[in-house]
Length: 307
Image (cartoon, rainbow, N blue to C red; front, side, top):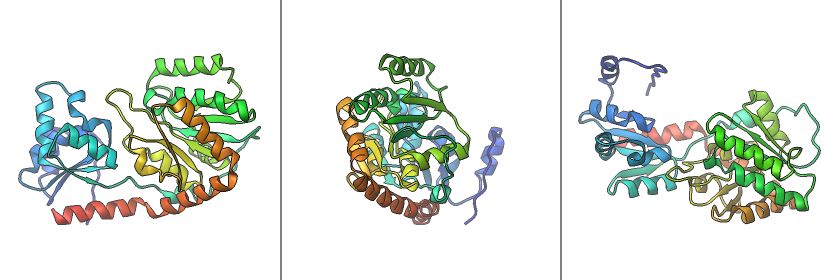
């Protein structure tokens, strides 16, 4: 019933010593699975499957792929979404999986500070690193279509601009090409208070995740965080967002295959129907308040005790 955290690199002998006690071993990130499996011995062994890295053959090269396969077969994989569990099972048939959705710190979003700047129109918010898997280009193009009917609509994108610099350059070029310089803003990382203020000021939250090659959205935590802030949310099907959004209840799920058509329609629906948007925001907020990290911990501890 106690947890100890080591947030630093340790020499292998110290890792072995640290893992020598305990009734179960749990690797909470996929890259640590082989080492944890080797140390676990006959003890119950768990791995958390967060997303793309459950496709271990795409990440590792021989002979390390066989090492990961061995470790995963030894484990019960705790997947953060049903989609992640399906991908993991397809990657390694017979793998034992169980789904425990991510939680959210709802208290963090309970009292949102005011925004320190005036708004010129309804704001669409997206939070996440600017990279292909997050569908930022598709969101920019969707905003061009949205503004044909709602010329005052704005879009604010918060998140790292460092992961895929070439992609960020393409996004900036598309904003210029579509004449959206004053309508779509890439703000990069922001202080916590400022980011929370944008959650409070926005009308709609969008995370248009795309399965980019072998990479996919494992859950879409910012969708749940936006729900905690009382926002109606828009995510995509065929990825982990299917667990973060209850379609038609807490928000909308749209097809990845035709985002340039489906995404503008979803955004306009929520902007043009504020009563429906408010109902979805309230339903999402209630759901987020029940999906706490304490509840997630209870589910995982139950798995430990059943092992």
